[in-house]
Amino acid sequence: MKSIETNLLIEMLAAGSKEIADNFEYINNLNVFPVPDGDTGTNMKITTISAIENLRNQSNNNLSIFAMGKIYCKQLLMNARGNSGVIFSQIIRGFFIPIKEDHNAIDVPLLIECFKGAKERAYKAVVNPVEGTILTIIREIAEQIESFENSDIETTFKNALDIGLTALKKTPEILPSLKEAKVVDSGGYGLCKFIEGMYLYLINFATNAIDANALVAIQGEINKSEKEALEITFSSKNTFIQSQNRYTINEEGFGYCCEFVIQKNFITHERQPKKSDFNLKKFEKEILLTGDSLVVVEDNEIVKVHVHSVYPSLVFEVGQKYGEFLKIKVDNMTLQYLENHPEISTEELFFKFNLSDEIKLVVTCPSKKMSEYLKNEFQIENVINTEETGNPSTNEIMNQITNSKSRNVIVLTDDSNILLSANQAADFVKERINVNVIPSKNIVDVICACLVFDANKLVNENVKAMKKAIKKLDCGCIGSSIKTSQFNGVFVEKGDYIGICDKKIVLAEKRREAAIIELLKRLCVRKNAKIVYIVYGQDVKMREINNIEKVVNETYGLKCKFIDGGQKIYSYFVGVFRN
Image (cartoon, rainbow, N blue to C red; front, side, top):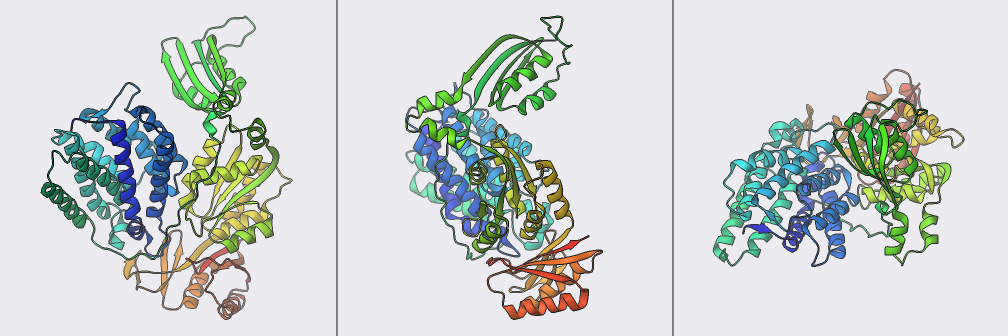
């Protein structure tokens, strides 16, 4: 086969999504050691399945491959969950970058450029790229694919898969934590399964050229390569819960489409100030503060700009700093959206965007009981419970931000895996809403940040106070190991209770009470300890709590604040507050 057209590519993407969905529990298990908080498979499953379903709903037989890619990439990003989902969405977005509007299909040379674009976009999306992860897989594919004999589309995809699986096998040698746990990278494995699904659909599509025996041989070869890459298998107890589709108004359809052409350093009136020297990167950074969907073309003394913004006056103010306008064009995208969506009333649309100045909090938490605690104790209306569905998607966080009906929002995440999605959600609404994302290590950080929140103070004052409170906390948690191994120099047997601080295992005990007491010992002896916050899980008994309180009071002279979190995975979240 010499090229891929739109409809075939859609089915290949669907097959890749199905391959992830069929293997999501195994992908989770590659990531869960030493406690079952890894959900890469779940995140990638929800991200890809939701995107392909929305793509099918919006696509038609006449859709170009460029237009299809645009829809699919947006849906991936809107439904992206956790770090793995966000990074995967950027890999796919990069894949589609080389595809232009005049392309009717993807041939072999363009396919190679697509893999290169995927790598470039992925690495730009991550501030501090870590090798031995999904990034390594797409980088190896992009860097090596051209050196292979790529006679047709099928062979090119097979080469990409072989390169990916070879790179996957090397991930434990690159990332020490993978080597200690004797697993390959979970996100990288998920990406390989996605490519495998695309490839298998492709060769099934070409059955006229490949007989049944050859197809069986190809599948056997893939299975052999995977077996070499995977040193260990697990049985997962995690349950996937399908996320519900939510009705959301398309954020991209609002504000103004602004276009202008300026001549640099040109002054039309003597009272105008001297123009600033034009620097492309500086200009892009400055104008992005006013909007998004930015395109800037510099040609000698002329600069042409296209940007979407809620505040066109700010856009033109930035432009006029560097020159004078030769052309100006402004279209109201909100009116265009209403014309194209008669089912949405004007009242519904503008009610959604009627924002107050009151500061609102959006918080993530690990259980329904903790969600109720945050609502009752701090009157927080917008709480995202991750107990059943796992890490929230970008879209879910954005929905909570917009549902707050405020132009000043502070987002508190109780897990670092949610941070990328939260930042992406904040970026989506930055034109209308001032969002500050405060990262934290666990739910105790969130609680202490909420304790110092004061609705009567300014946003910046609250952000500063909340970050300061989090810095004064030494945090840890207690969970149960699902396998025997040595991690960070600590020998752990299956079923042991382990203590984790700063994402590192610091202890392992046979008894849970002994584990929490040892963890508290490590935290309480630190300088200026003042009070201990403990959020306990659903299986913890009052006798154990009383024993812990007695030890802390008598040994360290500290008071304990116990909160019934009712969480399933971690038995305890602990935070020691220092002066």
